[in-house]
Length: 540
Image 1 (spheres, helix red, strand yellow):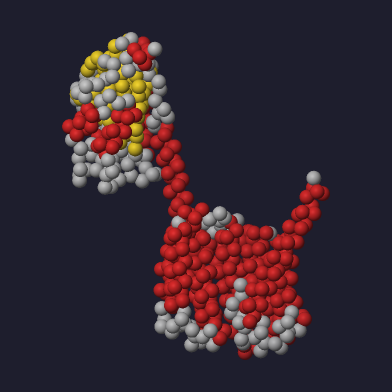
Image 2 (cartoon, rainbow, N blue to C red):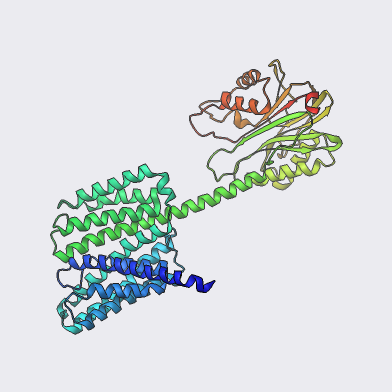
């Protein structure tokens, strides 16, 4: 099997070498065409970014492509052969050093972490580029191609030119290779087009006139970084860099008053700094998004653990539930509901609301839910279940926290059914007859968990075929308070119209008629449980 794959592997490797070397030579020749003070020293050097990205993505084994590209690029510059070899050695060692330093700090080429962007800037763009600048200029100095008086200027130009390549070209290649298929870009394609056009227009205006307006280019770059993240930062910087270099080389723009090498150096350095800022912002945005996604995932999992996945099948009773947590996706709601089995073939239901939201509310909800479930194994009276909830919350939180809840038990006996309701400071459920008559079920009670012993009572009533019961939390009534508060009479009117509908249709009617399309996000959690006694037809 290994021998069968070897020719294919060698072919792919050879193709990679050819592509990298060709890209190095093409961009290198362009860079040298912009060299003025010396034929071998230029302020624009994209090959450094190509070489670094190639070795980071493809590994050290691609170093021959870098060496070949550097050799072919400098062959016809008119310097002695040993100078060409020295420059080739320096360029190759620079790429290897940059890749080594990045690998040493566990660099991720997606550039989605701030530490990776800082490593690219500090270790590759600033540190490793000094290798080629030092070896190359020393070789030119030893050959007499460079005078001692010009050494410092040549070293600076070489170093900053290579740095610009690492900051502009390398990120673009790394992001292009690791972010495919650019899902964020595709989701925001119209905005991406507007951003690209804006960067192009702003860049053309800024670098076509002498007025120093260079920092006007920062807002669209920041826009690209914050909205399109790494793809936007890298692509936007590349667009701006191409415009800046092209117009500055022709003698236009705010840097045109300097010499040919200096003005290109200033233009590229400015754009490189802008690119670094954009990459930092994109990394911060990506890290924040990951934290928010992680928090939302935890909240979703925690919220799901506090609610039944599905309502159990109750004999003779149809059921449906709706829950919506208010606020941002990473917040856990304080409302809850649960359906559980009681002794002697009966079923129980609890709907409640704990104070606050988030982790603490989740802890109280879990305490309430599992207290009820455990007690329901031997106790069937709703009032007694609520008393046990009160004792558990008071014992755990010492009267500093409280909750409201309504608990009910159901008993079906052929064509007849009976519901017993007890409320602990919670809105009473509403009973709906098939004729549209709506009445309260049960009697009011006191809050649970406070330092006062609650007065709780059980109220029983019969159910006929087609009768419905709707349990809800107060978030349904004040979802859009204080601008709009729903009165119980409004809720009763909606339920009366939907009296003959099943539980799911009843909840849909309540959501449409009571909540509607509110002007804002609901300010409170909402829980609704609807039940309908179907009579003998459901038992057949």
